[in-house]
Length: 435
Image 1: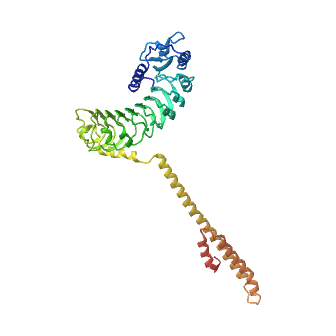
Image 2: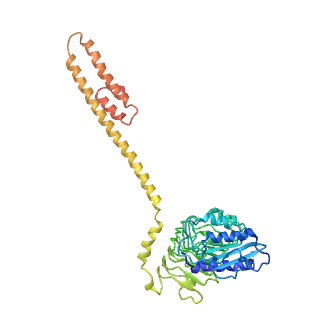
Image 3: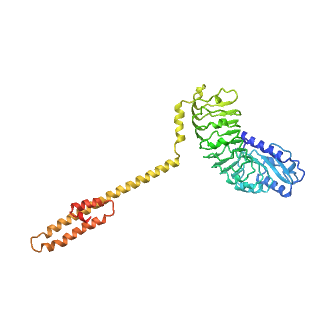
């Protein structure tokens, strides 16, 4: 991560070019003392890395000879461009603070270009990054920044080039559509996802490869009439490839390789006249190819290996069963949805089981009480059975007690699920009228 890759090198070249186009280093007015002190403090915060060696109070920083590792431009006594490229292959020491770094950089309020590449910078990117109200180029590639990209970055409405490639950013990309002047966006080589970001249709280059995007290709891309380069390779994108991607008027480079795109490439698609490079290899595509992206096209490079396509290069294709089986995981519900469904099913089964167990328990209780009442009836009849005239007086009290017990039993269950069961027992005890 601490070395200059092809992507970050391209970002760096743009940054250095803008430094010298916007503000030539030969500006006549000397740098203000506060700006000078800020640069020397920056030297300490970056732990005296090789490009900064030799800076001192006697160094005229605005007139340093430009090199691939260092470029400083000044205008009207202020620093307007700063580009530093290191060779760090590890993060800076534990004393480094990304918050202190950007607090210091914010004192260079005239910056239009800020490029800090391969310097071992680590920690979260602070929200105070939006203090650069005039910034046009921000390049922090090949460092060790982590956490989410702060949403405050969308407040830098002057931004034209944003390059955060080769870091450890994760989570959802904030809404970048307010950046209506943005033309270059490179977020490749991170762990961003799962949804593809919202960006302005003014983009010329959109590089999101080597991330964790799980989305489908959104229809909103159809409005990107200025887009020349789209690289979404090495993600987890799924679904069909929309035909409009091949016919965008400015599209030159389209790379969707290393995803889980499924289905057939639309047979009726037409390719834009500017399209020179197409890579749809290592997906789960089936069927044939439209004529404009067949591998033998003379005016464009087309890479299609690692699919299940009907191609002359059949040895580079998988059997159809491979793509059919591989497409299944792409449409399965997420783990959260599956676990949520299992939880709901378990809750329902638990409730049903509880109701059944309760009903059985109540039934057993009713049966035991009923048997007790029948036993009391038998004892009362045996004890007080006599043909004498006192018979009616002696029988009334015990019979009333038994009947009262049965009636209490029915009243007890009159509002529960076992009432019908209770009434059946009451019926057999000649007390159905009490229920």
